[in-house]
Image (cartoon, rainbow, N blue to C red):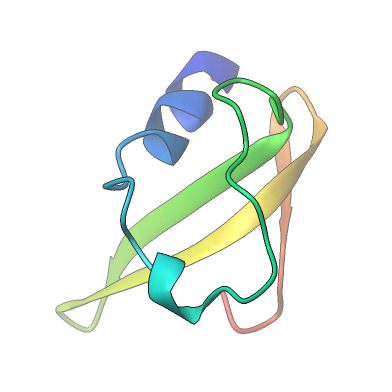
Length: 65
């Protein structure tokens, strides 16, 4: 399960959302292995949000996700 979640993180294009980040820096690949990207369909609309691995098979996301 964990490799699938990590794969989802890297499916985003590198430029996705970078124009909105001020004062940040680009992370090196695989430097944050606990970060995940969640994408799903809800009422025929694609929803996306981030999360963090709490356990090998448990992802914590924000309430809006």
